[in-house]
Length: 237
Image (cartoon, rainbow, N blue to C red; front, side, top):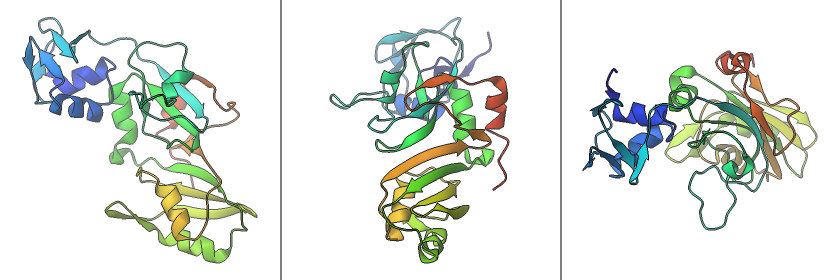
């Protein structure tokens, strides 16, 4: 069997996304043939090497699964449970071990979220080279004005980078639509705050060319092959 990089092998085995697998390796949580390995580029061969994460044996690639979820508010996108808080994976009653979310929605945000055990696929979706946009509907308790839209369009500083939306438009009195390419934490809420708007509801309705549609809140279903392709076929804004 062909050797492959340790981070890629762990992602293919459904441990986490490739980027997350690199962090796991850097943290010294991975052993290959009994030796702690901290270099993600280390070559391994499933037919020869014994690989463990946190002292639990990892076996080679499992069947890949892909789900679309309409995430309800109140759930955290994490594989590790912080205290007694609810995590997205609590909503799943089927599928193999090793599921994780592709990207994140914060606890109070609802809407379209992808869940898989395919690290390679997840890496492709979140990598900037895929040029995928994400669309959100944002509700506020006041009427959205032209001044609000102009300020939103100017962008805001999120962490260490100025983030500017692809487009912003008013949907109805207290609702606006915003499309972004960035994937930074709380970016929509930060943009709204800079415009003087309080967010009462935030919902992601599209990733790439994939729409959330009528999937009920809190439910999920497998992605079709066509829907997987639609992720990379950008909707015209």
